[in-house]
Image (cartoon, rainbow, N blue to C red; front, side, top):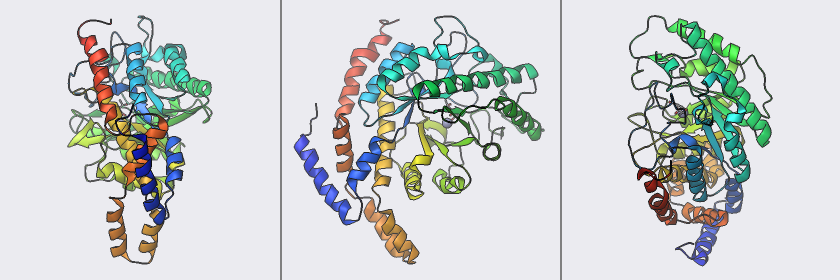
Length: 429
Ligand code: RNT
Ligand code: ZN
């Protein structure tokens, strides 16, 4: 299957292993840890956040998927087939991340505040078959009840209660999923609520959001089944002046009410480092969800690549020894390129960052730092950048039975020709 011989992968790995060994880093441990480090793959990259509702769906509330590359999944079966393809090109065992708009209701229109676990039965059974965990998200956007720009903080009681009920049913569904899968379902709540121009009553909306959340969280679930998460945001397109669920709101509400908080890499000012927030947050929070994304000038949700921001994030998790306290989830949606390639590129990039971090000789950096030898610290950091992590990565792919190096790209291309392109030509539905 591989265009690179197994012998050469093993030889390169054994050299790399020696190099890391000399720095006191065990590559075998890193490989074992990578194999048990899940990343939650978001279903919404497969269809540009459209979902399956017949009368609503799509993006709004400041989020936007651009591009009309052919081949987007149109049904649950197509999306699951695409997922399986992507998962076959990614090393390790992962999780799937669903949004409420991906309910399958047999053509019947089921309002979002009346969704039930049975509407996700196909997803659950499929995930069981694949042996992957399932995470979940209420969908508080792309809906007539969100048209005013406000959902759970709306001044309109009718609108507010609708979204309270939606999040409540999503929690019940998530708890059921977590219980059935035997692995807690991480349910992330994001509200688009905000204003294009300066509000006069910032407090009123936040007070209503707080009260609504109190109602939502009045029902208690076992954390063995459900992990409640709240995601903050700085601004959205058309929602530039005010975001109700700002960072301070979410951090305050989350910490006070024992919820997990989510940092999305695109939800802060471009000069703010999300990596820097990890250690500060973990002193006060048990765990943390990271939405691994890539902002380009704004919260554009570009496909994740192995850049400095991503590396810094992974390094901070390693340096805080916090792999067991962080949930990694992807959050990007690029409709302008092959969507399977987007998924696989982003996931593999995130995993490479984690691996590089796991292979870091952190103890040597710390020694230099505590000796006050910052020149040595900087020199070591630079040398670390060119350590042969790629040979360890290739070994991880080989051990996981997925394509090594660039081989996966051709396989994704074949899938595009044989499956995705046919969708456009009218076959399928
Ligand atoms: C929006 C948030 C949120 C969404 C997904 C679709 O800015 O990042 O996480 O991207 O729920
Ligand atoms: Zn996000």
